Image 1 (spheres, rainbow, N blue to C red):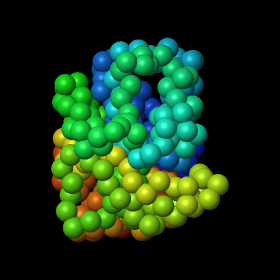
Image 2 (cartoon, one colour):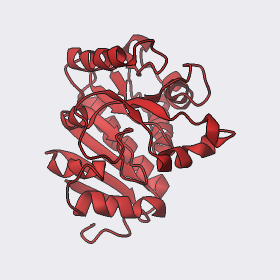
Image 3 (cartoon, one colour):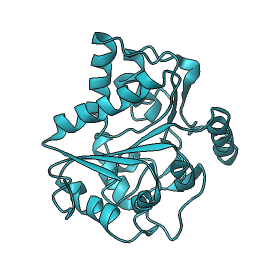
Image 4 (cartoon, one colour):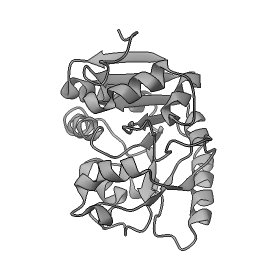
Length: 245
């Protein structure tokens, strides 16, 4: 595991974008796993600038999003499909048929999960998975539990996650309580992982995930067992680490 500590959020975002861009330039047909939330927004902004200014192309890239809320229509302003198009996809040359996001409005959610796993497998697996980190240590929407979920599944959101996401909604009762998420086993099958975290609120989870015991009660801790993980943090998120360089 390689840990990189940036001075601040802007530097972290540039380093993350450079990491993704280098991978795409070396592998124009790369399969990327992509996150949502506040942390990757700076990375997406930098990638858009690279696309516009240095001919970084995504036209042959395939993407798989980590998760989607259950019950939100794709055009809903808080759906993750909407987030991805507004903040990234509509600003680059990715082809729509190469964009994959779970359908949280599917009539049969269990079948949608199976179908999503099949699509990842048929694409040859994910080359580079970019992850954010929840305050409670979740990756994707794999919440603290007594087990590591193997594959894409429907999950009930932890109350702390609902509280954290309430800032994006007018009222907390509008926050969905369930989501579809790529499972821990599927994340661990990705060839390379890039984990991003910023801010003091993530410091305790980062310390526990990277330097504590591996346990499903802190899902990100499983990344200690992955053979190719790069972690990019800002100084605040790294503040409780003992071995950061």
